[in-house]
Length: 148
Length: 148
DNA sequence: TGAATTCATATCGCGCACGATTAAATCGTT
DNA sequence: AACGATTTAATCGTGCGCGATATGAATTCA
Image (cartoon, rainbow over all chains, first blue to last red; front, top):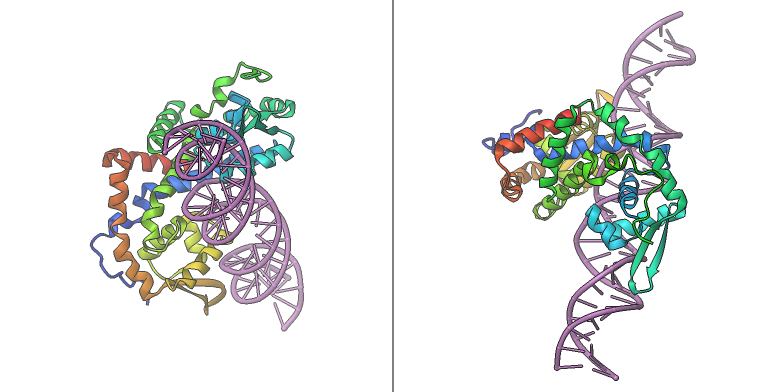
């Protein structure tokens, strides 16, 4: 009763999990999250929260919309995430008085200070990945074209 | 009040979002899910459910553990997912009489039949990605080493 | 000006991922 | 046979992602 062939067998290869770019991407992304988790636990951040903080460390007062554009996420994902960062005292969230539709997210001193602990993370990840820097750059840029 | 520099400015580059492999991976994986969604809606599958079906289409009776190994997921993710596939009539879930700890997941006729609709998906994705086949293969294999 | 439209964010529901824990079956050692 | 250790799934709680929808503010334009 095992290995019963599926209804048509010709196009097997095209559906093999090992051949799927999508699965390689899915698995690598999951692995990456797991790799960061213990490092980020020390900062009290989740992986998506860390990415949001990276954006804010680059330029602090930013609207939810600008953050969403940088991260390619929409408000249904960001709003709760930002509320958790706010609850942790890392950011403030305030309506823009110039345009009450906008919400301005800004780092607190605590949020800015956290960056000093975060700077050690990329090196640790780099070591754990054990891949030449050059190859990492190429891979990163290839992935950017997928996420265009 | 904008662009206030963070506490130390030396290691800016290493924390820039654009330089992060992890973010490229995160963004590409999210994009891929969004690319598949409309295609999979037609089959009534989510993206992770589709990956699980790919595994089962390769070899149908499989334990939860074997499925988890193939997908690099654990039972806390798989059990609810498989219950939804079962609810949809695509698989059965039964305790292995040989070893009552194991649960054997097997395709139903409906589950096997769904493969005929799935075979058109990879081609559509390939067209949407608009990337040379060769480059896709290289990228896929690079990602596999990340997910090692 | 007022009504319709557009824009920015928030809310809700569902389905993952995963760490932590639990429960039950099997195995190993004595 | 007994009993502690290991194996296998399931359960639970938290935090995403995102489609669909709602809300309210700003803008357009009749």
